[in-house]
Image (cartoon, rainbow, N blue to C red; front, side, top):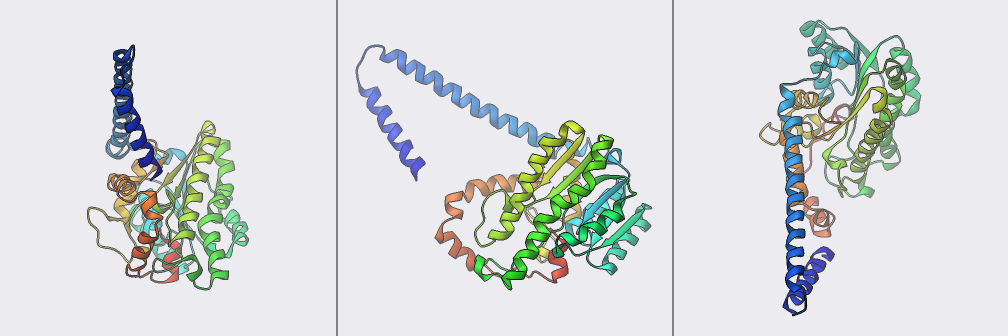
Length: 342
């Protein structure tokens, strides 16, 4: 509203100025015309630059894929038994890496490990831990990873608060749930990074991929805690990349829109909703082309459209919040699935 009011006042003042008769009026009009032309040209250049970056990131990248094997022999994937995590583990194995699978279900870890070994002939190593337990699990993970040359880390594990849009105080069993979500969505990212980053720096190469969310790009009422945890991943990734890019370390943040997984009730795949394998294939192609990505062209376009059609003032309005509250529940499935998928 303030921006609209300021714009109206500016136009009124401009009309009043042009209506006046004073010396050098023609010169002033010419100056304003030049400034307007320069401003339009600047916006056009910015738009063109963004289009070129988008083409490189989402189109050209499929023809110019990075050699992920060059980062190291092993890739570590958290939340690797289903959804995006499983897709990353599988695709990394297909591209020639051995994979460390981390999750909370021994049976599902073993199943994914066997699939990778049988289909791609790559080595696997499984680590059973529950990321909601907090800092106590990382000494075990450190021991399991000690002798492995870790080239890639995918921080994917995450969980949601509710199976529907809800106010913060409606979080079930909040004393426990809030701690679990912070342990899983936030604490896991720097702790896992702490374990694998030092050897990467010594070798002068490494790749860390942090899976955030579109909901981390801007505030989202009714999923406040989840949105806030994903914002952490974005800021942490950007800062970490700035700190260690000179050491040969790439830190990429991925902010997907809707992907068909258990967390999203296995939504039907369409033009807007990607399957996990298809999304991960596109997302891995962006490595070497972008350190901050929506993962695929479809999600990038949706992100732009969403920011225009649902601006901050609307998304934060009481009207919009009440409208969201009427939306149907998202069947979250088992707790196992909600923790291990993004």
